[in-house]
Length: 245
Image (cartoon, rainbow, N blue to C red; front, side, top):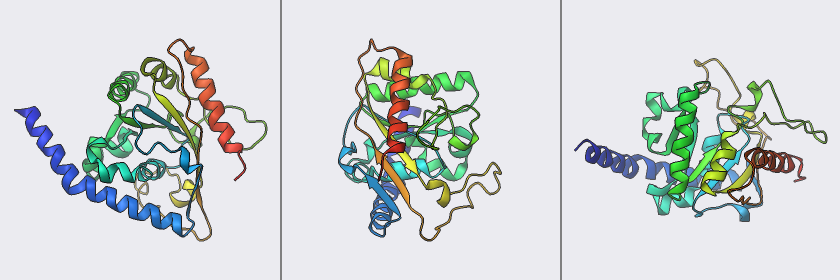
């Protein structure tokens, strides 16, 4: 009975909130691309309707999950029940009451809690095995707050050392990995550790652009070493970072 009620509530959320949100995302995304605020590089590589996709991206700002979700607007409109799942910080998003309507599409993670992180990995694995698309930021948080970074000798652009969980997921699920490099979102939603201003810093700076570079899909066999998977993904992200626009 409880499970049936939960399903009914989820359908109601999707019908009255998620679908209109997808429509709004699509309109906003198209408009921002049209006026040049969002720039997409290699749009043809984007997996609009792919299955078992692990979208991995760097994480300069809290705006990143919304930007990547907006790129899936066609899926939200044509099949809202199968929208991408976003791995999101539990404190910033999932626990906040005003984001309750997004919960059907969020996989929460409590940073620093090993048990919570392990449970999150299991949820992601289950979703990928069911053919879902999962958006993940394997740096384990926003780039700015890291203390250990991967060297990038040819560029000042950097990423934090990636979590090994992404290697585990790829090996176990045979998911197709699509690397994505994001630039400029921190100018539209500046980073802040002050929760009082966390959601009040959105702005539209004149002349600035958000750029998304979509990499070639990566395929791995189950016998690929976990560390090798992580290194290849990190190399792909840094390669996109250095790619000339």
